[in-house]
Length: 119
Image 1: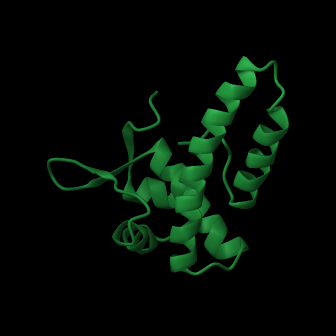
Image 2: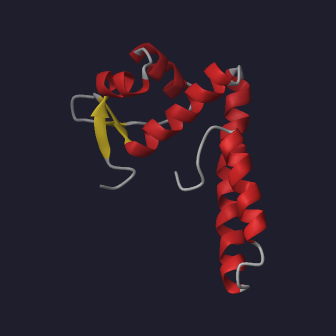
Image 3: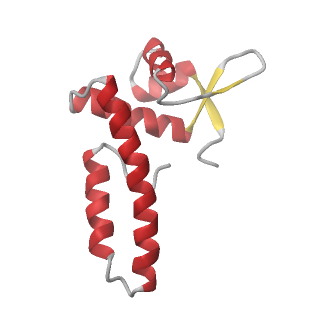
């Protein structure tokens, strides 16, 4: 199964995330996710969408961050993942000498409520 394959209608996504469907619509309006649409205009969420929404939920509910702060955190997450990929490649070429940086980035991603291997 591909991470970006649309799988879940809004009611299933809401149940998985323990959020109200209206909250998912709000997060879509905020630009946190862009679910696919069926021919009948139903929203279909992918596994990647669900993971991003889990991060949003974590940042709002557990960290008390407002939606502007969540947008900043999501941008930082995206950039950290890119840096992590580059550092991991460099570390692999240098016999693991940069693994400490990879671990540090992983720790920062964890603070942001996500893991390094989620896109």
